[in-house]
Length: 125
Image (cartoon, rainbow, N blue to C red):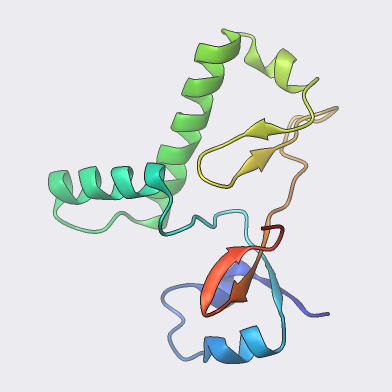
C-alpha cells in the first residue's frame, strides 16, 4: 500500500497522470479535501465567486469550513461546545468531514481519499 500526501493531488500539480494513482490504489492523507459536489462547498463557492469574481483559495475554503463547523457547534452545544466535543466520538463537519476530539485538543481523525472511477472520493465511502 502506498500512502501519499494531499500535495500530490494539488490542483497546481498538473504534471501528474492521476490514472496512475488510481491504478496503483494509492491512498492520500487529505485533511483539507472537499468533495466537489458537496452542497455546502458549492454554495460557498458560488457566493464567493459572485462577491469576489474569482475562485476561492484553499485558505478561504479552510476558513469558511472552520467557521461553519464552529458556528454549528456553538448553536448545538453552546459556548462550552469543546467540553461536549471532548466526550463525543464522531462530530460531523461540513461535507464528508468528521471530527474526533476525545481526550485531545485537536482532531484525532485523519481523512484519507483515493481515486474511484476517475474521481477523488473518501476512502471509507
